[in-house]
Image 1 (cartoon, helix red, strand yellow):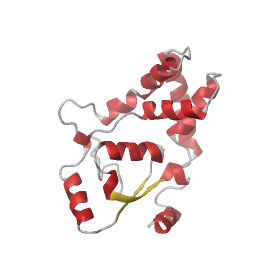
Image 2: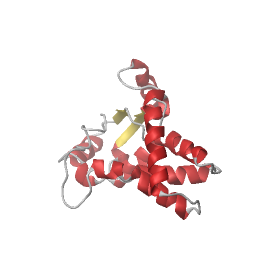
Image 3: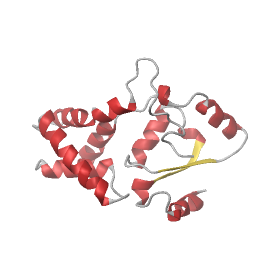
Image 4: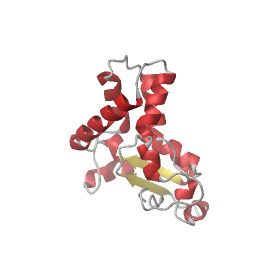
Length: 173
């Protein structure tokens, strides 16, 4: 499986949950709030400007770039000490949640039934979201236990369609 537009239908909105676009757009504001909560003096505008700049550079950096890389760069550009625990915290807040309403209808039931039948289900996703955040999000929507092997391009430094991204999945299966 893949995650975007295979498990999650990011263009659909159901109920009162925000869309994926709204969650993504709120990332800089959430990061600024998290930094202020950690007692760093930052403004929403400064953080948003730097995030836009760093994201543009990151897209040119290739598949090993993740949101955690972006947040590390944010700390550095703001002249802040960058302790790992704070970077991890701000990265998780920046990435934001995923909602079960974004799942394609029947996906949780289908993955659950395949799992009950003894099938091992794997996922390879091209994503800049760090694997630990992806795992948190899959746990949040109730799918993590069904996904036996999970490969995330940002963690591996290679993305589909490069066939070398299959190697980690083979080793972990």
